[in-house]
Image (cartoon, rainbow, N blue to C red; front, side, top):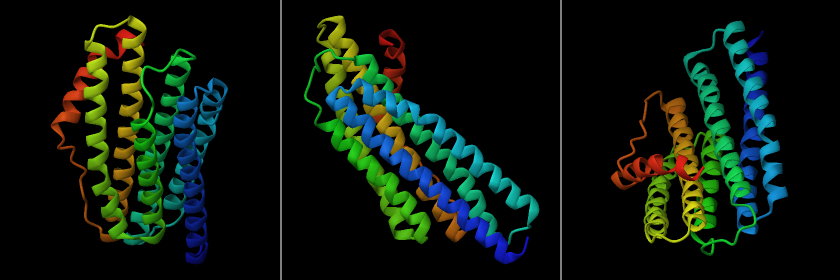
Length: 240
């Protein structure tokens, strides 16, 4: 394969990864929209797209491995191929989290919602923007945008902590099992959105490494978020 052929294939792989990113971004939007409207048939369509995303990941990873095997890329090109390989994993996991939200929609079903869904859709829009911006900074090699994505993660953590306090407060009020179960399910939705934001942050940091050759580690220094996860881990299976 010539250098020109190498770069053509690399551009093609990048385009496929961006297509995959657009699909999971749509999954996030649809998953939360169908939760808000309690559209069970719509939630099922989100789940049906999971196989498409998984297959795209496999195809992209195979093409990356083949590109490395057939050509010995220069350092900068090698970082780009490795970044695509790892970013694709983050994108696939974002899709998984969107599917988890769709599954929770099916679990809640048609039972009356215990609270108006205001914070969760706002949180979803912010995480969706992070995903979109993380992929944009990849395309444009934009370090400032990558840093903006990293900074956007803290407000998401704060929203998650606030929702944790509110929804666990509902559980602790000792109302009906149905109310407690739904509160836990809605808290899990928020948790999956927080994880999506973490994956978007990972993508931004991979872009930083790709461009500069220097690693930037994502440190979750939010003690409230960590404590929330510990408590939620102990209650998730009870209401599954």
